[in-house]
Length: 204
Image 1 (cartoon, rainbow, N blue to C red):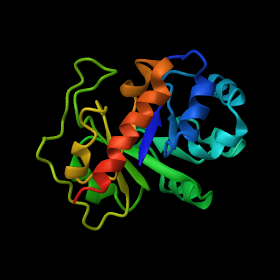
Image 2 (cartoon, rainbow, N blue to C red):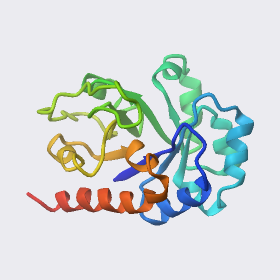
Image 3 (tube, rainbow, N blue to C red):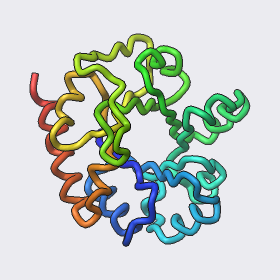
């Protein structure tokens, strides 16, 4: 599965690009705009084709997940530390897809039966954040024993290295810089990376 994380910045024709990415086969789109108000998120969602809502997951404002019928919620590491069991139970009762961020494989057995998806990274040196370097060793082979979560690689993933994630036993990748550094080529670049990911699924 190859998914998308939105740029933290405003992108020209972003609603159109997001729709086309989902149509191109993106596993999901994480709507993450740090510093945005709930009103700014709502305004962006209002400009997106409602047919896209099930494929969108949102960070920060779970109330918008209910309002727009989105596919799920993402909780960052800092917010996760303050999340109550009642809140988590509420997410599950809504049948929302739930994801959270981790920075070390050691957290997989800790959180792998609580969350549907764990975003682990940075796996490679970040494209969108210069100086944000990999924290995962190149010879890593993830041990997912006892975990039911999908482990998704985040950080620096592009067409030159996505194939390595198969060797590291990731279940998928989340793209940010590889897509949004050149928004006009977002769909072309997505197809290229997706094709490589799919090809290596077929290689023993």
